[in-house]
Image 1 (cartoon, rainbow, N blue to C red):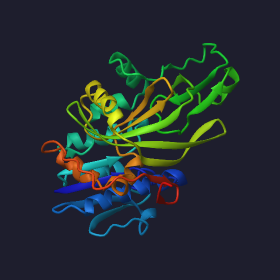
Image 2: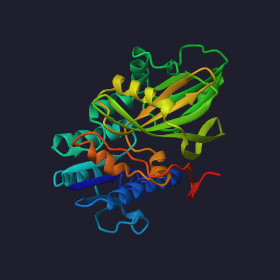
Image 3: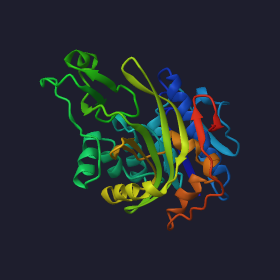
Image 4: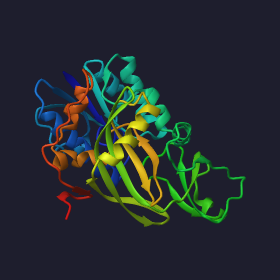
Length: 329
């Protein structure tokens, strides 16, 4: 099987501009983890789009690399390569329809997608639509509505996020009307009450409404300039048994989800709330093989022919930070 791997940041999605340091580091970690997973599998040939600035910074042994320079149209290169491959594995932000567009290209050229289809991405990329589906299916979630600049909100603490934003980018903690002035006029935001609680995530596999929970992860945030910043993730921080039913509920509510999916949660003493659904590889994926001995790429590929056979050789907690992966103390 010939697989096209494309991670947006490292693959040339920003080939005409400077690279944000944090996103570049996160993207490179996810890309390297996926390449390492695929390298362990037989009968797999990997085609890789790579921003020229990452040449020599990613281990591409036995990988066919196509360098993307500033004069290239990465989208055209992606489409051209996808037409020569059996499958494509995109890792990209949902914002601005980027991941959805890549999925559509693969679907149009008849290349098998190793992530959720564009229809599922369109729903989960939109925080308001995600809230509506969760609410309709009686899955506890954070109350969400469109932000309206003409409404006077209370002086409570609010979270303001772009409706299709990724992670903490361009999301703000605001209190009262003065705090809202920092928001970009041209961006459509959703507003949510700020809820104090433990920030966790689930790393799952999905197929036809069925869910397999791989790990529960603890997200470590700092707050600076009224923004959350993800500092580290502890992968496999808790037993999966008590979270499996929640993952299954999400699978039934979003039956088109396929492959690896991350689910962000907020846990209070009273309940567990679903915050976001990410239909792609997430940062937690980077630590799964070290934590549990699972090859996520192999499990995802097994979904193309049936159900995954999940056997965990070991059970460690692994902390991922900006610089390294280390065993949690």
